[in-house]
Length: 316
Image (cartoon, rainbow, N blue to C red; front, side, top):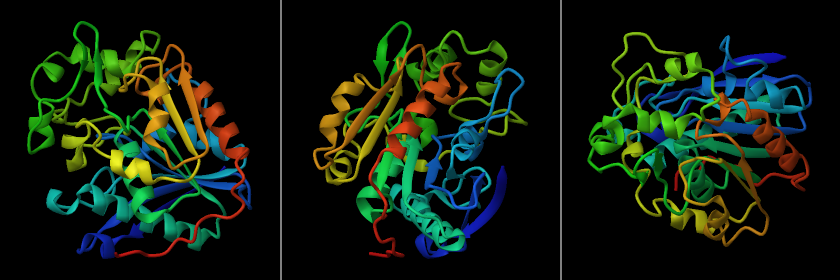
């Protein structure tokens, strides 16, 4: 396994000095496919490279890399190890543009072939916008996000959405997060190891209150997390996507019905749906996680994408 760390200059997207932190996993000199993955809000690229005593086996990045892919994992603009950026400069379009530039640079630098985009949760929201705006990828995989309307499932009150507000802290206040049991229910099925759940929820939500946090947790959220559960927040963008789309979710996830999601992508002629049984929103912590990884890998390996779209540094 070859693991390389990269700092990609994305200043032209942001309008000030800025970089993205990206890790690339490879096990073959000439990877069959290049995947570029973005985690959800409040998480770092380590979500795709989890290491925990109660989580046996490799993380998702290593799983795909050992099967012939180059797998890049990226901290979104202004989060994790990507350099700090004022919230006013880290809106959805700018963050998507920065990810587009990072993917472009890596493909050129490492001489990588066909590229697919993978986004989990808020990363899925960014991926939909990025693909619509910049056409970065030959295919996309949206995991745990709804292009129709994203909700949080709760044990007692059904599907709830944030109260709304100008900041992430304001938007995610109120009954949805007053009881951490709501987040625990949405994020983790009952069979996830208790010590994993405890570590994952130890940082505080949505405001990070812990002095030290697990490596997969980001102290900051992308500011557009405040809007991610507005009805159809990226519906217009999803409607323009014309490449193959993979839609993955847990049996209990942040969307009402994954089977209804296909209608959000009328421009795509190739839509695959996969629902993982006994799995909640944080797929990569689940004992069933390899079901999703295997389905995703098989889907991508059967796509006819010998050539990727031409990727340019777009400032339009």
